[in-house]
Length: 85
Image 1 (cartoon, rainbow, N blue to C red):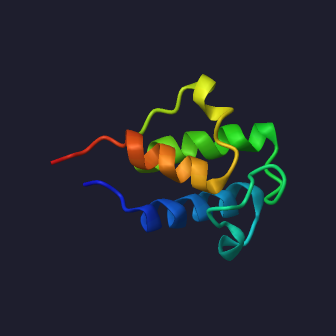
Image 2 (cartoon, rainbow, N blue to C red; image 1 turned 60 degrees about the vertical axis):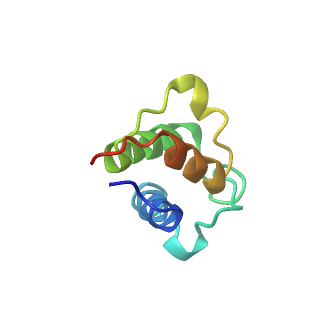
Image 3 (cartoon, rainbow, N blue to C red; image 1 turned 90 degrees about the horizontal axis):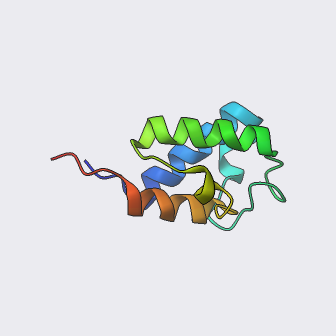
């Protein structure tokens, strides 16, 4: 089952909340992980690993640097998720 954009953003919000303690309502598409949400590089690795497990995607290291905002991550996950029929 493919996740909707809203489900992906909600999931990312929960992940960021668990890892960085940021309130879920603050995690929005236009928010930068580093500038707005105070997610450092080590925490970002944790966010990526948790997102990979939750959404059944693989996010290679070279792609992680391009995920600057929550919207970037949500779009990447939406495009790369494995469809399970």
